[in-house]
Image (cartoon, rainbow, N blue to C red):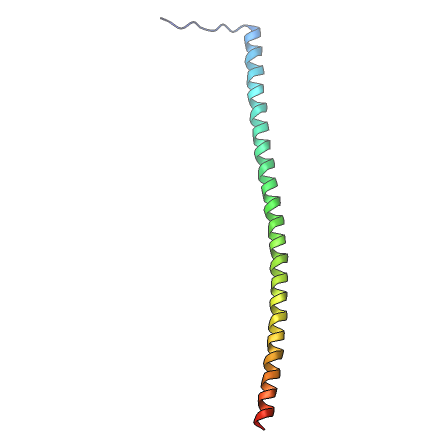
Length: 86
């Protein structure tokens, strides 16, 4: 019931080196994929933030314009009210 010991021949040592090298390359490729995906996600998020800021700036400008129009109408109504009171 003893296990058979693997002999250390030149070809087996070479095979072990090649297998370990394959594992290393696979791990490096997996990590490179992770970095690439993370970088891509970060760039997309940054672009989305820029678009959101531009949209928010446009909405703020539209609100300012509406507020100015409302103030002008209030001023007009106030002037009309003063004119009718006199």
